[in-house]
Image 1 (cartoon, rainbow, N blue to C red):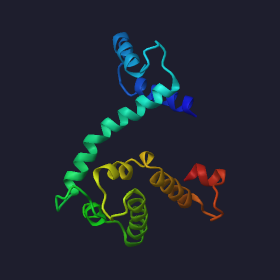
Image 2: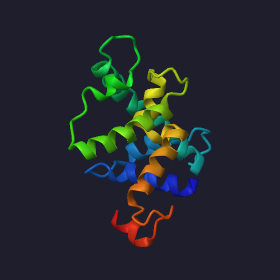
Image 3: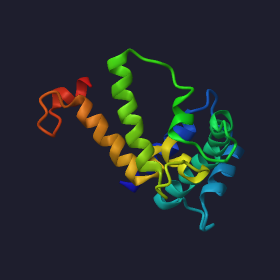
Image 4: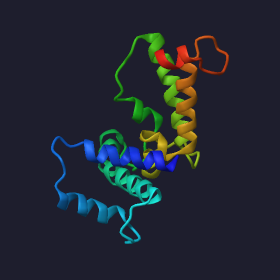
Length: 161
């Protein structure tokens, strides 16, 4: 699994740019990823680099999200503050979305104070950073596709979404 994650990350790094990376850029990237300086990049090093990079990129977005929605300026977000700026949907869709969002909020609220602090916000916006939120999101996705309500996804349910 780690090898697949590492290869996927490397492919994204190399293909996310329109132009090819120059050899100097590749050498610099290799040096950044090769944390033990043995001249080789392992799957573990790629995974660690990927996690560190995503965390750094997410920090600005998290700070912006918090600043935009924290109306009482206490450094935390209530569910109402998060929902205040969300777009309205048709009533049945809005009700379903609200229930899903409440579940994610509760799973992300690690200290169970009904407020999301900056540390918890990362898990709310990036479910892969919080196991409880990640499992909940996966379960919600499965349930949304499980047309026959048997608890599993057939190929048809999985592939058509």
